[in-house]
Image (tube, rainbow, N blue to C red):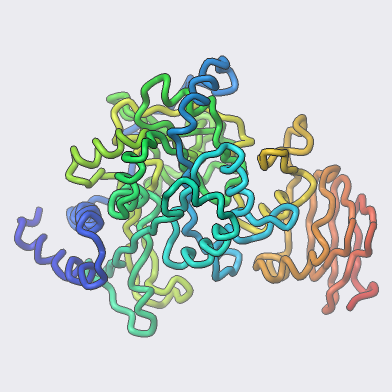
Length: 473
């Protein structure tokens, strides 16, 4: 165990670097808290031996209408916050992912704004420096948002990457911006404070916040869930859904032996316990990252802890340049927004239907949402076109031609095909689609040639088809 002086000396260059970038003292204090944990040997790992599975959660689908009535009464004291810092880099984007067009030529952000307007509640974005300007352009198209007298966004912070070899700040002269990383969406709590937004909201009479990811159009403000938070006087409420095999690699809900709920992410699972971590029968609920928050409780919790909530550490081992595996090995210290469930005494979780979780992380996800499998209702809620459908089709797109958003959109210039009657789709090779193509049943499309092949307008395909050597561009 190192004494206080060496620890302070180790942290001094980080503090100097952060102060030079005018990073607030509260952010420095939170980073220091996790850095000292790292130096002390804390890996952030949570073992099966330290937790219990969670069973028997309340289910919003089984609730009475009383909660909806309560929620409706406090709607005027409620705000929607969207996590909007992502660039969609996995799809090759260099701007906010929320600017992707989804339905009726509307992007994610258009739809989210209209959802907020239907509920007549303010919308607030937590942007990163990379998404701030582009997002404000879209917000500017909706002058009615100004009537609430609030800023429309606040910015996520950045923290230094840590050289793995000696735990010092990494330097990377080729691209100094790569010396920094966003500290995860757990940064929302200090960001609300340092931006002054938390105090502004409380002064204006806002008491409750619904927080979710901007790429999840299923996460709409629901008066029943709001009413459940308020009627039960909860400081924090997490929406969870039934875990399936498709969710087995994501974070799950668990309980400490003292009864407190916690969230365990995959990066916090010991290497030898991954099979147990992915056991959906043992750990049967996953975090949708839809969070309901009592803003006064957050202010009290921050003040009581010296503005350091002490969220669970996530230590990510990466390279300073994520595209160069031979660049300097680093640690990125991050936290998850949902891990605050272990901080608030009396925090709770509630089971919600899968329809409240439709995130878009890949172009496969985007194809599903853009297709006729989903529709927007009059309140701009994204709903399954067939509510009785048990399972969405299995989709496999050739990464060479569909992984990046520009390549994907190039191959669907007039819209995506109908998937309403499709059970499986696999595309191998360079294939594009004209308007009005219909795919039914299990479909496998192949093009082994070197030129792009276009499926003609109005084609109905019900089986495997080899389009190699057919008419192409």
